[in-house]
Structure formats: structure tokens, C-alpha cells
Amino acid sequence: MLKIVVTENPEQWDLNLEAVLIIKPSDYISKEEYAGQKNVKIINLCKSYQYQSEGYYISLLAEARGHKSIPVTSTLLDFKLPNLAREDAEDFDKLIQEALEKSNYNEKVEFTVYFGLTEDSSLSRIGILLFNLFQTPLQQVIFIKKEKWQLHSLKPINLKDLDAKSNPFLIKSLESFLSGKNISRKNYKRRKYDLAILVKPGDETPPSDARALQKFVKAAENVGFNADFISKSDYGKITDYDALFIRENTNVNHHTFRFARKAEHEGLAVIDDPNSILKCTNKVYLEELLRANNVATPKSLIFHKNDIKEIESFAFPFVIKLPDGSFSKGVKKVENVEERDALLKEYFQNTDLLIAQEFMPTDFDWRVGVLNGKILFVCKYFMARNHWQIIEWKSATEHREGNGETIAIDQAPKKLISLAIKASKLIGNGLYGVDIKESKGNFYVIEVNDNPNIDSGSEDKVGNMEVYESIMKHLMNIVISRDHGR
Image 1 (cartoon, rainbow, N blue to C red):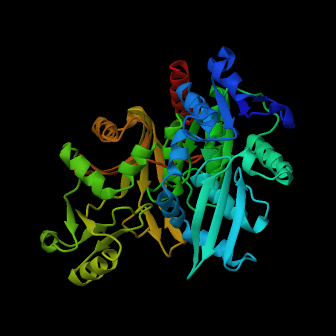
Image 2: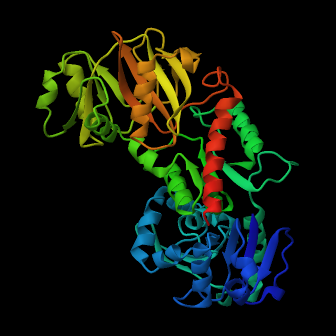
Image 3: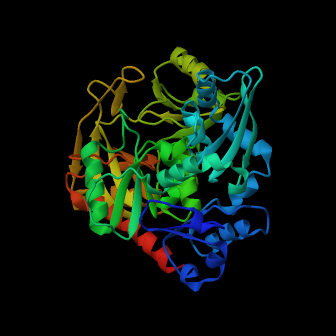
């Protein structure tokens, strides 16, 4: 990817980086050689971002040309709404309070964020946070302490607002931003397109194990990607890439959803896309979607905390589900009235709706991997020993799982395959894991997962590298089609 820094005085900049151009705003605006370039990232360091200024038009033109720009015009407009900035910062209140309480500041702190970096290292976590939320090169920040620390002011600033003594740190920050990818493998041949794989280091229940992740890297390189691993602190680097593959457990109220939404907004190919995350991570939505489209499911009922009479018709035992549980968490079987009422009291503390579902005992659940409407793998997940679920949680962090078996796609029941495809198409054309129960020769969808497990020696046992390369080819096809459409 070509990186272009646009600023009024290019001759004053001395960046020690390859594949980086420094040009004037007038050059970017008028020269055809820049207008016709593809796969370009623009770093807009003009002296003003005011409406209809050169700086404003640089970001606007970049978006029109399909170039990735920092800042984008929508971000500049966000700063016109100070309450929006404060509300987003509140989402990360714990981090802000912890960082500032550990700092040497008492009542007020004012500082500048340079591409996510701060001159005072004690403020570095806040700098990364604010850059991730509001991607402008330079931000002026003020926090004031009342009962607790509160964001008082946040605004973008320009080069003309900086003291001359700040320039060395600015150059250092810009160089770090331009070259700061977490390269997964060194000394490889550069390819045209860049793929980010979002992971959570140290995750106890990752959707892919370490060996599988390396297979994804190999598959990505085979289809023409440079593959980098990134983590949640790399949100500000999303625009460096052409595709995002999320290999971290997803949720809506979570940074994975922010990554997916940001990537989609920037025109990246994305798995998991934000729409799939939104649909799959809420069991209330899924239940209603499947029912409305005549997809076979176990007998189920969505009920409100103020109206639980309907579940009295459910014969014991039956299952009660939280709307946003995952990995068998938030899914409990109740055997009698006392267990039911105790669980309802616990679960209704955090949600207004729950799902009741008939208990359908089976030795295993089917998991069918679907990519873009085509079957990727078929597995049997057996229940944990002496337990009714695939995963038995002993505590919040301790669990045990049943065994798994992967079978050839052409050996799987045809009814199973058609049901999995039908259910996944209701979500989209991404990567899904459809959980299905088989009882008396009939099949019933339990849920559709947007972030299915793909582990080495498990889901890939039959297809091997074809499983990984199919996903990478799907992403590459999206990237190429969008690139050619610009």
C-alpha cells in the first residue's frame, strides 16, 4: 500500500521510511497520477480541517477516490458534537479512571495525542483509546477531576497549533504509525494486498488455536495477502489493510464489533461482518428469524420478565437461555419449579427477555461450517462426559469438553446440509457455524454462530488446508472485486 502524507511544507519533513510520499495539497488535488492511484493511504496533515478548507477537501477527495484517509470527514464532523465524544469516552471509563489515578495529576490534565502516542508515558493507554475512537492525527485533550475524572474537552488540532519543540515527537509518532504493523512473519515477499487477523493474546477459549492461526497465515500468503496479527489496541491501524479476519470471540457490546464496523466503513473485506455479529450473537433475534422463515427448531418461547406465565406450559426439564451467551455459558437446564424460579431471578437482573426451549437430549450436536452458502466442514461435537452439553463449565474459567469427529461432506445427511445452508443464508454470505440437533431422523437448528471454531486437527481434519484457503480466497475475491470497481 502506497502511503502519502499531505502537508503544506513537504520540504520540512524528513521521514526515514520507504514507500511514503510527502506532497502538497495542491498536488493531491490536481495531479492525475495521484487521483488514479489504487491501494493508497492518505495521512492528512494540512494546517486546517475547517469546512471547505484544503484540508477538508483532501479527506473528502480521498474518500471519493477510494483511498483510505486519516482523518475521514465523518470523524471531523463528530468533533462538532462534544457530547458524542464524551459518551464514547464513557464506554471506556474504567480504563480512564485507572490510568489517571496512577498518574501524577490531581485536578486537571491537558495533553496532546500524536497518532495515539503521548509524550507522558503514563497517559499512553488513554492516548491509544482516544485515537482509536476518533482517528485524527493530532488531538488536544483535557480531563478534569470532580467526583471522578471526566473528559472536559477533545478537539483535533493542526500543525500550526504545535510548538516547534513538539516536532521531533510528532515525526517519531508519524513514523511509528506508518510502520507500526505487527508483522506475523518476517523476510517474506511483499504482496499487493494486506490482511489483518484480529486475535486476543492469551485467550483461554479462542476460536482458532495457534497451529490453525499459522495455517491461516500460510493460506493467506498462498492467495496473495500479506498477513499480520493485530489485537484490540491496533484499532487505529485498520485503514492500513484491505481485509480483516476476526479470530476472536465476538459480541456487539465489544471491541470486535467496533473493528468490524470500522473495517466495513473503510471498504475492507470483513469476516465477521458487523451485520452477522449483530444477528448471530443475540439468541432472541435468531429465534425470531428462524421461526419467521420456517426453519425447524426445538419448541421455543421468547418471554418478558413481567410475563412468565407462558413458560409454565413447558414440561420439565427444559432449557433457559440468555440472549447473548456463548460457549454454552448462559444456557441452563432446569429440572423443577424451584430451579426455574431461581434462575429467572438471576438472569432477569441483566436482561428483559429470555428464551425457554424444550430439552432435546442427544449424544452429540452437529456443527456445519458454511462459507458464502457452501459447506466448509461437518463435525459431530459429543457431549462432555456425564453432562448434557458439549462444554461443561466448572467455574468462570475452568471447563471440560466432549470429543469431536469430523466427517466428509459427501457422507453427511442431505437434510442436515440443506437445513444448514438455509439457516446461514438468513444471516448473510459470510462464515458461519450452524449448530443442529438430530432426533428421530429429523433435524433442528439450535443456533447460527458468526465466529465458528476452526482448530487444527479438528474442523480441518478432512479438508485440511482447503478449509483455510477457501476462507482466504473468499476474502481475496471481495478485495479484488472492490478494487476493480473503484
